[in-house]
Image (tube, rainbow, N blue to C red):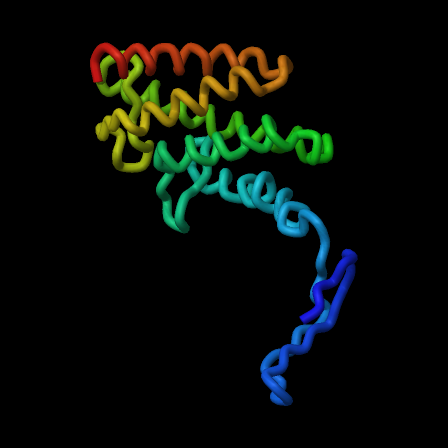
Length: 183
């Protein structure tokens, strides 16, 4: 077996003795191939499409049905925040702007969940599980994830998002207070 030393496009044949077991044509080998081929699709394109189906103007549709559950929203926001925090130097500026916007799409939904819980008479800072049938489900572990996502957004979003950052900070503080004193 020989290993390619350089990036490029290769054809491959795998033998067992004289028997040809497998062939592969046009196999690309390069550093960061998965990142380079998927970052825009995973961090922007897919989310931009999925946000249109939530019917509430924020968040992303989950799992092919109308579920927009809090932990999935928080998890996606945190993944986008990881890109901003750890890899923003590897992301073109136009894509980074799209990622910032998607962070706000998720965080706006988390704020809506807090507002909905309060509207339904739950303590200030509690959060609904989602806005499509589980509004009265108040799950502390959902809220913990939301606090992390919101607090990191306050830290990582540029100052051009100052109004949204203020709303995220308020929700994170209210929810953290609810978690530590009433949940």
